[in-house]
Image (cartoon, rainbow, N blue to C red):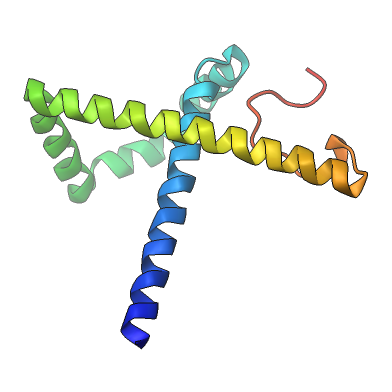
Length: 130
């Protein structure tokens, strides 16, 4: 019985993690369309501290192994197509999940008599007031 409960809890945690990852991926894709966000990213990438951190990361054997595996997968047209389809599915799911959270937040605001300014930011790609 306890194993069943543990397994069920693990599945719920995995679903929550996948859902969060989908939302992060969807938000990232939106942010990459925002010129202001891309300018800020370019500034960050030009900083010596960031470049040093990236150099350290790329020299890590585990990172190099992951890159090699990705290159290998992408060189196979069938695998590349499957990966692309999976990413599109995850982005769509993430966008749907973000929209659902926004609806729930809006409903909660209405029930509580609060305004958007009273709620924490949900990662909207543009800052308030812009």
